[in-house]
Image 1 (cartoon, rainbow, N blue to C red):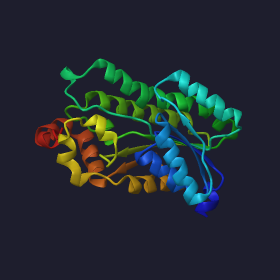
Image 2 (image 1 turned 180 degrees about the vertical axis):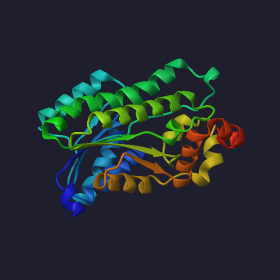
Image 3 (image 1 turned 30 degrees about the vertical axis):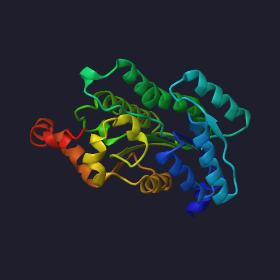
Image 4 (image 1 turned 120 degrees about the horizontal axis):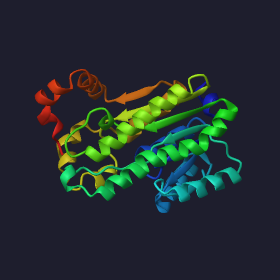
Length: 265
């Protein structure tokens, strides 16, 4: 049944060169779907393409794109349209973070985070949504973060960008409630990926939370299950989701009692 659901479907994945983006691309191949791979690093995209080919005998298309650059996004989308590819599922996964105290943070880096994490995500959605509306079918999956639910020290810019992703997704979901287009938000905790090469330059955060970090392949499998069984949010790990709910209910109390637990960076 699941193979029939995804067989022949086209899934556009941003941030597909490494981490959960690459893992999602490989995972959907099990069900006969074809990914379109989007990321900046052409060599890493080529590696994912070849791995997909070795496993499934199909070479998925890839496009080297800076998701934060509107012109590059539009040029890539024109090429995709020229190849007559309708996007059935959009997975907005591209994103990065920088963990620093706000007083020490370069505002240019925060602007870059918003350009990729928020505006790039919105741009791909804006381009692909019309064809989904025309067919009255589709699924938009936005990869946000638990950081968009629980703000912590040294993540002001990153948390703000992920709060924006969650807010945008919630609004879009309500706008599309009379259609057959699903909008899901994925809010993971820290994952063992190259994300922390930029985000955690000191290495302190990874050392402090290593034992809690999620495996990207496990996260990818759960995201693919979300395609089969759409819901508004996928939160992981479970204990962190409980923490975020408590934080929304009792923010001052949680900040006072668990303040040191938040300060892992």
